[in-house]
Image (cartoon, one colour):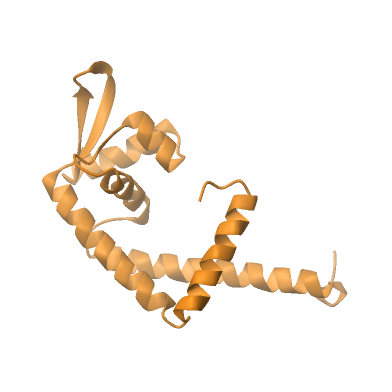
Length: 155
């Protein structure tokens, strides 16, 4: 096992950066969970709401489109859709043009809730990251995007 004192400067910097990124991610996640709790929305449900909201009117996607945009298994998407359907935020309909296909749509309540939730989430993110000046946030965003692209992540 390599001792910390035996690490190169590059290894020490990488290790410190990795740990800080993990801590920042945990803090952001915990704060966002706390903010979203008021809406009865979990972070894992937020991704599906976001995909539908970004699709624009009529805020509808096929199950296959949700699979592709969320990078989940069909079971994962089904679980999220069922949870949001039980809350009255989405509905499932058979595609009238292709009866084999299911369409998932935001309900009116879902559209309203999505606007509230994303407004609250954006406010929390802005508040949490306000310690960094805008140019630093832009640079950090660009650097993290480059890293994710290098790892083969789509965004």
